[in-house]
Amino acid sequence: MAEIHVNPTRMELKKLKTRLLTARRGHKLLKDKRDELMKQFLEVVRENRDLREKAEESLRSAYASFSAAAAVNHPAMIREALLLPKTERTLRYSSTNMMSVEVPVFSVDTSGDGDNDCFGFAFTSGGLDSAIARISELAPDMIRLAQLEKTAQLLAEEIEKTRRRVNALEHIMIPRYERAIKSISMKLDESDRSSRTRLMKVKDMMLKKKLEGARPDDTLFDGEENAV
Amino acid sequence: MAENGTVRVGIIGDRESVLGFMALGYTVCEASDAETARKALRELAQDESFGIIFITEALAPELTEEIDHYKDSPLPAIITIPTAGGAGKGYGMHALHRAVERAVGADILDQ
Image (cartoon, rainbow over all chains, first blue to last red; front, top):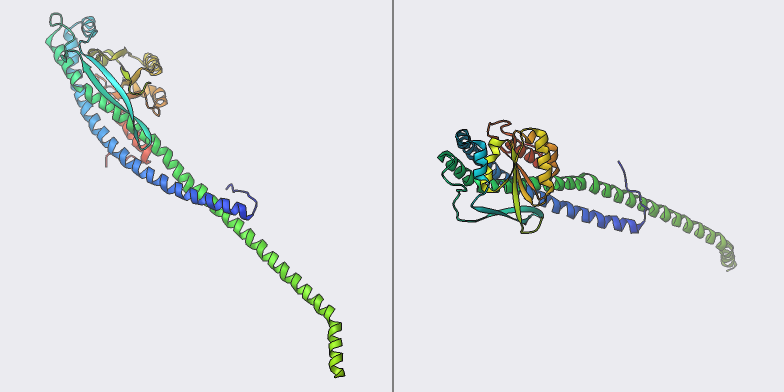
């Protein structure tokens, strides 16, 4: 595994220690973020699933009534009939911040006479009317589904990213810093010990030298003593 | 992609599935095969005025590459819907399960 190669100095040790502290704090924060994201994601995704089931069901029944209507009316006629909807729907998009993820919010503005008919009664069958009514009924659900599903996708991406970061910190960065700190402090201790033993040795040598240098005095002293 | 702007809705699929949505003012792209759908999807997705693009389950599995390309950007939301004939049924739900798997690491949606 790749190690951090640094000079074993106290400066580096201090730097690494601050980095380790930051990494640990970041790890904790990211872990909390991941957990919260997960909680929100699961909420969104459950709602998404229920809504999808509901929307798919109503969409299928709308299809059924639409194909029944399409069987009676000529396709070109239907197309023509639907070409100019009377009701104008504008979809507004804004985004909101969900755990620092930009998620879309869609809202529908309906303008016009609020009536879903976009064609007269003359050329098309009543079946088409009810089919269109069903489709426009489920439109809000579909828009909401789109919003939820996009939110779920974006949250899933963010969770994946966060999880990766948490893992990188937990299993790579933090152990790496710890090892580097350990190796530096061991080297520092080692050089500390070696300089200490050197000092002791030097002191010993100096003492010895001093003693040797003092020996003549000692004899002198001895001599004096003898003299007394 | 303006903040708080209005966006359009596109829908891609076979005629029977999508024609009804004309009544809602959606931009309807009829596509019976994957190639036409791919072209339509690219066109709609590159046009930044589209916020939501619905695509039928029959076509979506063939366009995963394009769909995944837009998965991580806030717009457009590309959403699969059932096909009128029921072709490719369950793909939309499958995509949801995949998102869960991506986030959690395991599919825990049905538990």
